[in-house]
Image 1 (tube, one colour):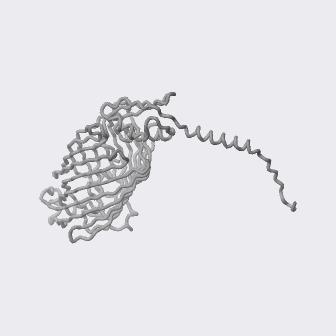
Image 2 (cartoon, helix red, strand yellow):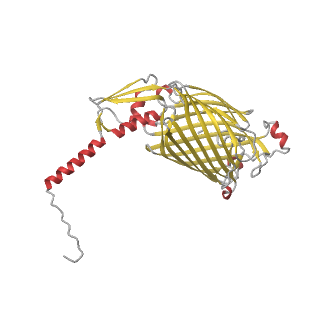
Image 3 (cartoon, one colour):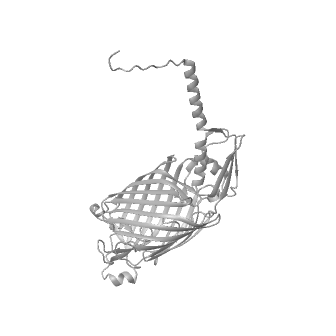
Length: 433
């Protein structure tokens, strides 16, 4: 033995003992996997929803062996349809899986009145995400934004041919009032205004490769015309010469990717979802084509028992020659405390942070208090995005009916931290994000 070397004695392990050890290890692994033999599946409480919808979301059939994790994933899939206010399950010693569902009311007459950014929005219509109890959505909607009227009809089937493939078809005839404000200025000035009339057709296909991976492809056609006939006196008093954009027709083809998963527990949400979309706009006229990239990240976390921390982050950019395809951000749905369309540009980022705490909670209704911080930056140059265009903090209240599909009444008050404006109150139906 060389000087400084250390002698190590390795005991001999008989082959029989080694095999016994490996068998025990594999046995522990098998126990950890907790496979169950599901002999029968019993479903109760689904008075409107067909049983095959619930069985399809489970991902397995009676007579199969199922890992505990796969069973819990199937139950989570059922909850994430949002068709049920609660789903409870049990597996007895005989391998019988019992599922007790409490259904939500899903035939929803739409009446939504929102006010934010100096614009009143009224929406009326009806839709049902569970037509004939088959988890198929049909809807029609009439909208009045200010004095401008619009309409849309749509059809969605998230389980086309009973596969984890979805289709989304929409037809829009919309009119949108655009108020153009002076950008990069502390003065709250109106520079221009017009009404955009748009005929739109949308066809989207998606496929769920796994619970946390969804790919999308879509086609969209937009035919835009512009007028100033319905522009209000507020704009005409500020601007003497209204400038109308040129009419455009664009075909869009795009791809999308969703990474992550949001799980629903009654009115609460948990999880993270990253959505990325890339589309190419192909002009039918003399305008040049352009590319648009959009990213959205949503995160929800239950904290302090039943409170929720909610975060949304968005960014996007395009090189559109048409100002109508710029990003328009304002108090209606992006940054509270500002007029609708208050900020515009070809580049933007946005952050919305909320803390949601239930004040009163019972099976029929929930009263939820909310504190929020909104930040946004929009510009025609990427280099200017370091400075916030808009920022606000505030508080709000929510009235939630857990047994009615996506029913949330929202009222927010925002205090601006950046720039002048005159809009503090924002209210509407559903959470801000």
